[in-house]
Image 1: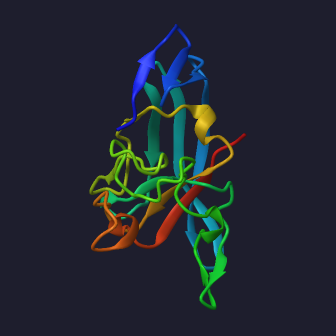
Image 2 (image 1 turned 90 degrees about the vertical axis):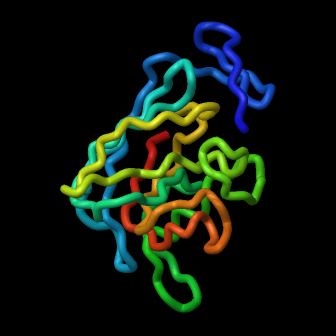
Length: 178
């Protein structure tokens, strides 16, 4: 579990290391549909902003398949396709889940694994997602110059029976600015 301890107004200790968490810092990430041919039309935005307890994510998304979707920060700021096993794969240039501590484990947002594990994205019956999410122990500075990924299926926050929560294909992606 990630620990957060308030040290001052704008500084947090994350795993014993002090990091700045400026109040009010924010960026808007444009999310686009992705497939093996490349990056497509916008499906909306996600506002990322620092809070005293960590990162706040405020999606304003549309045109998605209703239900739960795997939702992660990926290591590279690139939503383009890349070849894998002789086939072009949607948004593979984004790399794997953001895992700066090299845990190699997909345990969900509170499990102590990948720092890029976000809460599941819940898409309403009309294809919209607007529910605000919080990620403790992560700041905007941690995720800048990376990407956010939405997967086709849900996420069980485990590596079995399917790897990386079983979310499957990458269906939407956005680059988080520097």
